[in-house]
Length: 511
Image 1: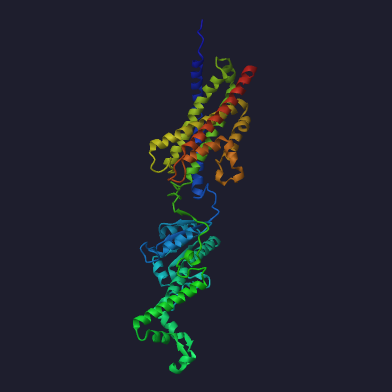
Image 2: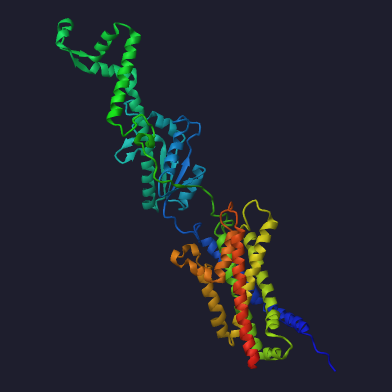
């Protein structure tokens, strides 16, 4: 009499059979690895560095400041500093500081920037020489500030004339707010200079009182003569009187124009105003990558996880086709007679799929690092810790993909149904989850849809760990939420597969 075979032995045999069937279809497995790499490679070469980022609503103003830090300027700082400070206080722009002229020329030549403002090395020196007097530099022309006269130029991309023109006007306004207050303040200071008082004293004619006309023998007298008479030949006293006259003129004009501080040499002090808003400042970071494949480009931090997730869920096609073939051969009908419950059958068929899905995810991430130069985490984080953070996400994504594959396999009876019940929903969910088009480009009113898909939660976790910003610190709470959501989706899919399999099991229908 034969001894009954234990369910665990059947489970082991089933696991071994499923594993051999899966790895026997080597072409399909190879395509699941190569196709995402091809997609990533092509898109990585074609897409620009702004892929996956919503266009900023503000104007990006790129500046190269070659003015020496120790140049003579105002309040101990170079005039290049004050131009950048004015731009920082300008609303609705993004101020980008470029490191050098070579970078600026390269960005404009490659059409990655419409224009770059270059503050020359003699900028402070030329601003100091700007004056309303005939011996100073006149920086003004009909359209604003003559940039060449103050050592500033704008490198423009001829293919982006409109955007470059807007940026040039922003630069013009900023220069005007820097140069004009300085020139007004410097001119107002001259009111107390001895040279100005001499000119004033010689040109101001005062009427002589009738009682003094006989003595002075003239009808008018200049202010210069009056000051000389008041000082009685004392030169020190005369200089002091002239200084008081200059201070009086300054005070009178200041009182007349009390809404302005005419001695202030910046726009804020001249107009007695404060900036209403501030620009967002960002240092330039080269995210374009190197070489033919743009290796190391920031866009690979988005492309690699996106297509890793997309193709993980396409395992449904491989699993579904194998199940359809087993139905035709009567294998599933024989499995119903084995001492296996629906749960054990799902476990036996699911574990090999899970193992292949995990291997696929790890291989794609490894290829992303070796081939495309992507990072697995922030710069400076130990490699062991990067891997430790990625492994749970890979496992949870594979678990959800396996659950969907098993659900579709229990529903489909033909190859067409495999596509309808498995491949098509997987592609639609991938589209809604942000695998094809990043959710950042979705309208804000529809971004919530991504949270209704396992792909959306998978990408949330991946992108938290693989942020394009190398200085970003990932939130493990966000990663944990993504993993829990994936486990929840896996549970729903597996429950659906179990319920469908149990229903067929009880009905004794042909599987």
